[in-house]
Image (cartoon, rainbow, N blue to C red):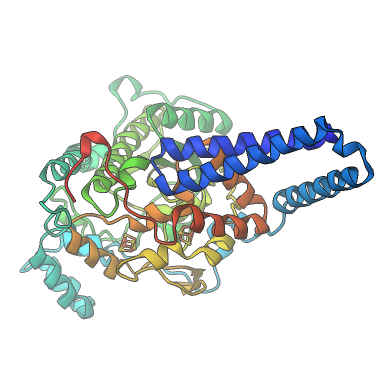
Length: 475
Ligand code: SF4
Ligand code: SF4
């Protein structure tokens, strides 16, 4: 019995130590203090256990009872936190599991970015759109006066953080070149014009996934496209293709290869300051780079493919990613992945290349988000709902208020990202956090326990962290 108790105690102390080290590496001062105290407590218990064994305490009647009770408590706790309880069968059905009513395809012209980036006052499109949606005209006019989506970039940083604004804007240099149609719908390389490369769907799937990962994607999955998630009409115009604006989007592709790239945890930690926007923009650039090459690869195989990235979207990517098994939708409306939580950006390639779809995941996100609410509590514009999921366009889910969120971006001059920074799923993907996410995924008691621990270790409103040295600036 002592050997079992000793093994458990050493294991627990080891996990405590790994958590403490992880907090130091992540520069999480508060968590490191609590993590250090927790580790010392565990170490003390382990030393006490060995000391009592050396004194022969556990061989006496009372001592062996203490040992048995201690073991029962430890196994009870272990079982209570690891036994698979609280699975969500709806999550395993992907976005189909959320459908409760009539779903209509989203018109891309209604997306807050499309309205404010694309429509120019005095243009034909302006007249057409605001005749259709007069309720949006006043808001959008006020936003246009303020500037682009980020208003005056870097406003929140005093003095204005020009070097980091420059770094964020530099990321646009990649996607901007990839906006013409021949880039996102690439023709095959001349060498591959004649002959299609034949492959079984399993082989094709493993090749395209492997290729995406080799190009820098961190997660990749495949889904059969649910037509609900294809935009009904084109709303974003980036390469003077005005004849497409307002036209129906017809997509003949059956599959989507969806991928996620991880945003740097140290840059996101500075949210809502400018370095966090570098993380966002850098991953849009990575997404454009990966999606364009992946589409060209599939074109060379002899199939049709369209890259979806910052400068061209046919589809709403979060639901496609859910169906492709990359994660679930969280309270903040973003994709929540098991590995990085919401700290990702998405890209995709739609194609007629025959592939085998992946299965959606049950990560316990719906239950965890129901009890957590940290993003909603920390959102400065109250854009994240506090209550339970509601019916939105025929689906039961949380919906971020994109209008008020977008207005806050304009005020601070960054893409904010506070919700992403504070989310307990966003911590670095180190061993102790992986262990915690695995327990949260399996067990509903673990969800409750680790929500409380996250509040204790990181605070109910975690503070902004300093930027890495190369992106340092004055607050
Ligand atoms: S902060 Fe909490 S409620 Fe918000 S998305 Fe993350 S886990 Fe869900
Ligand atoms: S990005 Fe900022 S303003 Fe927008 S929902 Fe997240 S916390 Fe709120």
